Length: 189
Image (cartoon, rainbow, N blue to C red; front, side, top):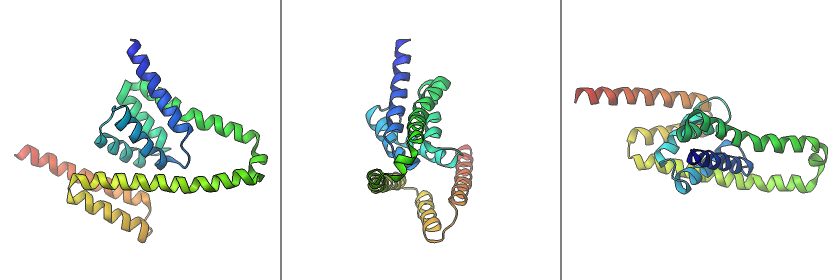
């Protein structure tokens, strides 16, 4: 039984630290989660992390919380999900509560304004890293359908200003059709 508590503590601590030191939103935390849960703890395979990322991006709500639900459940069921969610939501709640007490001082402080501006550059670099890693994973599949979908999604959102929700729902539809066709071929063969 001690082993289960150890895993829950590791899950809570990992999510707490990731959430506390991630600045810039959900996409930033994806690469850090990959490093933690795939490379360091080896709790997930790279393909599983890619699936978690896809599901969390297409689900309503904050990406880190959605990922916590899935990763926590994968590690320890419902208790794992609740533990991971708690670890994810506590740091922002604490930080925002403290900031709200000193909002006026933070808003007018030139040092804090400069620090936030500098952090944006770091956030952009981490997001770029996530994009490169995810694109690399798609290319590794060597499935032309996935590669074409990735390129088309990029062109649609970046050049044609198509809503990300439309792109996600379209990719979901194509993925479901592909799955249905794959399953049908499996039954015929």
